[in-house]
Structures are given as C-alpha cells and as structure tokens.
Length: 65
Figure (cartoon, rainbow, N blue to C red):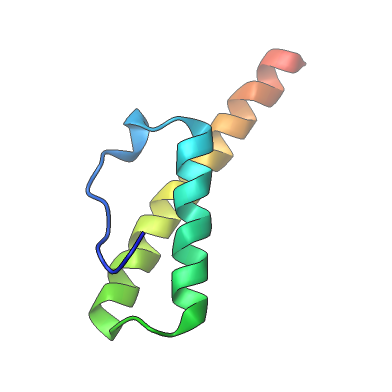
C-alpha cells in the first residue's frame, strides 16, 4: 500500500481485493510509520473497506440460506 491511500471507489473492488487492501492498511497502521494525516486517511479507507466486506459477506450468507 505504501504511504498513499488508494482512491478507487470501494464498490468497484472485488471482495478479495478489498480484504487484501484492508489487511495492508492494518499492517501499515500497526507499524506506526505513518504520519497522523496519512493514518487518519488510512483509517477512513479501512472503515469503508470493512463495511464493504461485511456487506459482501452478508449477501453471500443470504444466498446460501
């Protein structure tokens, strides 16, 4: 992920891509090597990715049921 937050629309990502990006954000934030501003942007992107992944999992669960 580097220091730059990706600007892609979350709804255009596959579940796997969104989950991978979310994992990268978590690793980046845990490393503590980001500025406060970048950490806030990463956190906001992470929240959007988390919601997206949760919705995709919920949709899949409903299809299975």
